[in-house]
Length: 357
Image (cartoon, rainbow, N blue to C red):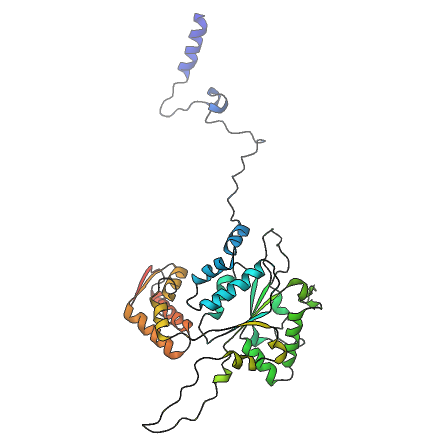
């Protein structure tokens, strides 16, 4: 017994660690050996899967009811509650694959948020927005009605199992399309193609040169939304009296539904289920937008550029007044703020704080 103890003690003494010495790996056994590398044939542990966003849950939450869609729009778009309520119901129905009652027509001056409301929903719905003014009849060079639908999804789920809402096609600048159809014989064919697309009952090829994709619009329930300023009825300028005491008659500020319908082809009028007329923003509306923490272009551009941007009240009101006078809408205020920021970034691309005054 004593010999064994002595032998073990001698072995331990042989492996006393000095400053430049290290214990051999054999001295440790099993998992306690910090120098022991796993054998080559042992697979390395797989990393834990990253948590993925459940887009179906996000979309279903946002589109739980028309009210939830309205709340989403109200975070992005100033005013025009009637338009936002109507649009929320239309989009909610499409998301749940309910057949549309008819097309929605939205009329309003430039810069009143018609397209901005659509843009706020495009990330969550199956929506495409088409510049109707640039469309050409089938057989002519340029985009046509059916090619505009290629970005839409016509199945309830995509290849990754994510839910697709019902397809929504937004025809922006629709008034320009209707004007073209009334003035040029070749463009009149666009209206018949559009009616065919709305009514369905026949197959339409939305494919390209590489692949044909045939769909029947009546089976898919495409929702159509027409946007436009429809300024033609108010463009007629009256002769103005001359003299210091002359009274100048202002042109009518807003369009009526009857005026708008008079510009539509009779065949299309019956396909419009609801018309929403947006009034132009007042000068106070422009100020409210510029000074709002929610809607101001200063905040939006600050979020996009990751720059802390502040603006003096005096400059904010001047930008609002200039935009109101120009009649170019909210985008005029956006352009003014963006131009100021771009000028600063030209010389200081790494700046993190801008004060506009």
